[in-house]
Image (tube, rainbow, N blue to C red; front, side):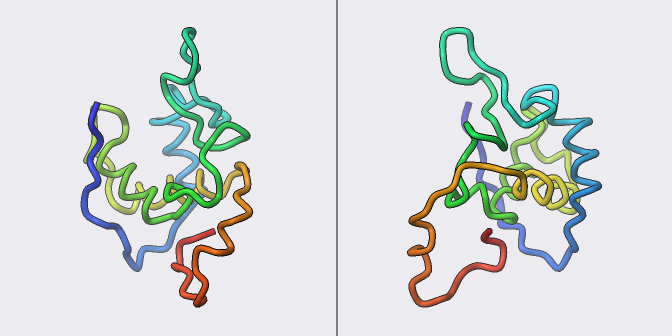
Length: 122
């Protein structure tokens, strides 16, 4: 399956992680798990990847950035139904799962040597 990048989401909308958690529970948890743990493939790996926790993407990954994750969610999720969430809903669900625990990536501190860290980076 090929995923869409879609247009960037970088809006003045105020992220609401509480609303995002409700969206996650209703539309994401059936595939990604109630605790974000993903759905394992019996042959190895994951059918649906973890979105937080020890096996998820690390804090330095692009998906750990709020607006990057929101754009991906808006244009690709729920699976097979991309484009059904509003930009606000996508920002809200991303605000929920991007702030959950995940593996560290110590070298991320070198990502912005001049201090120009994006506003949505962790």
